[in-house]
Length: 251
Image (cartoon, rainbow, N blue to C red; front, side, top):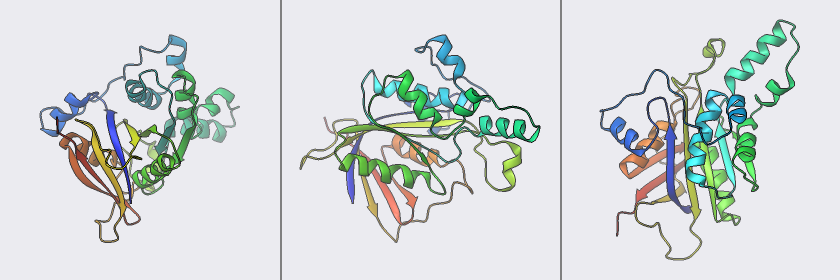
């Protein structure tokens, strides 16, 4: 069992960019937009032009929580920059030369690398391939980083719709979605979340509800966002693990 605090969170999807929007989505008052662009006006124009739509969503949610601070960042995604990778594969199939810049921006750790450069992060910045159970991969690794001494960190998940060619092997996300959590270690006995923060307990429970593979249901971030909006929830992560979330409402 591992306990830590989720002190803040931010999620972005087309039409939904803050906690108020997500609460309205949860209440059935607001739906996803067909198209939207994350606000990354805090970056210089030259840096903005290098970012894909997925990277912009990741950047916007991380920037809102970092607030100029330096801390470890862990990014977890099943497919990463799938659209950019597919474009490169098309060039290979056509016998076209590959752009070194395009290749560098397509690899799985490209987004976390851009985060560290653009947002001035000097702490460890890591990327995980989420596999079948990205929430499991992300939270287990994050809990280990906190247990090893990181007092705080960002944990981020992000996905984008896949090229049609991939769809015979996997389910595609319906839209870009990025979720970033600010996690704080709970090292001191009796120390709990402050008002409005969330107590999170990661535990192994073989009897927990089975998680669905992200290759079969790609919107795995939505149950996490729902639990954060509701202030509580039990999330099956996969491999017999679950995450219990509860918000502290005490003044």
